Length: 165
Image (cartoon, rainbow, N blue to C red; front, side, top):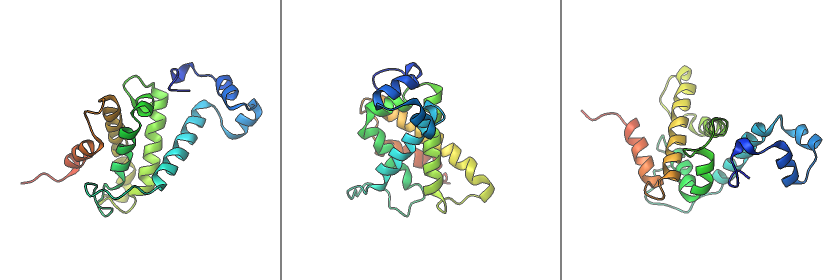
């Protein structure tokens, strides 16, 4: 539905009509449409990330500390029309924050033990990284193919690498 019209113009009634379900069934599972967006986005990304990708010699090794990041960027390259709606330049604040929350949750799960940061700094580090990933997803989706997931990852990895003396 979000590809068809702006998220703010979609009502719970529209969702119920499309899903052919009742209001009580909807509210038994979700507080509001924002809750549905967050839950469905988390579920979708977890499902997608659970499917192994074909071997890619250009991909960073699984042992690399930022190894979970390229997969999130590849999704924006594979589905630019979806990511333009979810994180693109005309996306509303609610949707953008929901997507950032989704990315933060996934990175929290996947980056535990990979980063050399103090435990009390882990959440702030993941928050920073999640906004960066969402920003790169938007840049990829809005670029019309000019920015690839690989190039976006190289930019992120370069920014987070120690400076050479």
